[in-house]
Length: 302
Length: 311
Image (tube, rainbow over all chains, first blue to last red; front, top):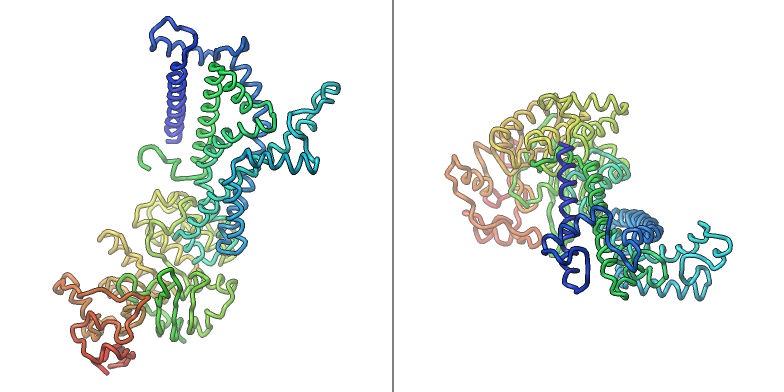
């Protein structure tokens, strides 16, 4: 049963990937330019394109292979994205769980308002404000970039990269905490009202036990499905952050590609973003099947 | 000494639409090994009454009066003291078996945690006892079933599992809230028999809207209408000689007694009439019933009724 579920998920992931490839192919074909197999029919061009993509030949951007370029930039993006996503999930879930459990308090209402305010403001405004306050006025962080000039002499050091990445990470984290928080709080509110929580309390279990054993495990379920969506949201939000902080990642690359009308590169970026989101979705599905027993026996009967 | 004595209990709570007076001056006594059926239609306050006893209502709920459990007023206990009573002394079997079990925990563990908590057993021993409980409620292959999740159980089996949770710690008082709700006729009959067998050495408050189910199980029946008790008597007396027009109306609405529904709707618990609460629907209503609220009076040996016809 478990294997069947797995195979299904793999099949859907691959399907989504091919649909994405098809769409990028169709959209970018509308732009007049030259690409491999232009002299053949549309169908043939599509297959040539897919064949090339699977071969790792994603086209060239100013003479440089697109895939190699993207890999290199992706690495820099992940330096910001991974800590930002982990931190925002951790903080968002903890704060959301806490106030979902202690709902209705004055503190709960004020935190909710602060979170809504934070989310309502676009990430680039936060980025500019943070640079203004923490870098310009307080001089705690650099204004942008990914390493100090001194690195030219002494070489790149981890601490220098950390120093440069701190503010972008903080900005992205601040921006993405509210989404997680809001969903977790809501999920808690729904779970606390469930009948099985009453059953648990009627057994005489302590509040702490009810919270950890009965409420949290159920309240976390929707979070797992939400995480890949949040990742997708962050990858998009990251474009602004990277532009403002001059961080040499995928976001900045996207901006440059658009500015230079470099369509092979754009096509490659769209594909890699889609791939990342598909992988995130797939891992969420796997993880979900681990924590929700209703999925395990899965197959057709659930 | 009675196991439970409810004295002049009022449970009110605020909603967006207004103050809901769900339980109004209810007096009820349950003796040792006595099974009392609390019968009334949906929304008459039965469930709120049961949650008042086990104190699992929202903290903002106003509860007045006394609930004496073995002469101790449980409304005065701290939350921690109350936790020692829940599941050990007073257990509750909730309605709606499909939602009352935690979907992500194994059924066996859900029974075992109550045993482990109250009897100080090791987790493994508690699990063994949980399997015994599942056997006691007649679930086949109990050992295998204990390691399954609620969604792998049928509706009837979930209800059995809930009963097993309720009875796991040899509690002295069981509150069962419509345990036969949503079950098909055969399963219902099995559950009724099981409830009857399993509660022989225990006191029980059995909540239902079904008089016939209550008659199967209970020694005494309390009729509840619009937040108050309107009739209380031995089951036989209620069946032979129903006094309150509401009880009579319920009997007349039974399929084998004419299937004649009571006219109208029960009043909203937010806006209760000042006189008799059954006035608008009563065939015997007189002018005096409109403004005078009747008191509970004892007619004959232990048969109480709240109606001005007997005043």
